[in-house]
Image (cartoon, rainbow, N blue to C red; front, side, top):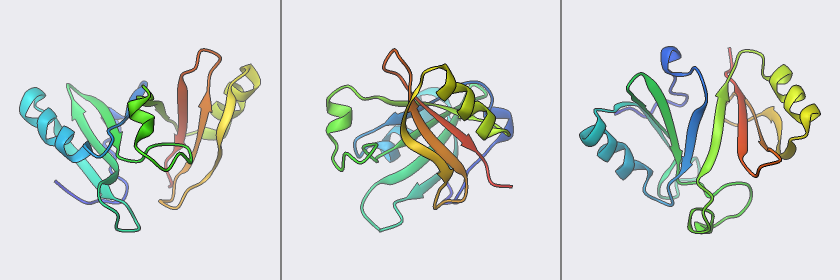
Length: 142
């Protein structure tokens, strides 16, 4: 287990990555998935303000990434997101984030959090598609 600020494993970053809201149980989930499914722990990031829980956790299962957070989402400020069925979002880790972002917005996705440089160093934004699913576009810092 590590506390690397930006855990990445390039081989596991392909495809669509589920990013789950765990309502304070992200660390327990990482530990459980290691026991149950042989998950490889790719890193855990505590909240920068020192509050309990993890702002980001990442494991690899069967050569694919699964990301988790104890953060409740877009400005909600509580753990009610998971309680009302908000599982999190689908994450795309891409080299050309602006192109992916612009295409999704042009196709009709609604912006929930603007695509911009984040405190952890990557470019990231959150969208909602017409079917109610949330999508994040992340371009890793180089």
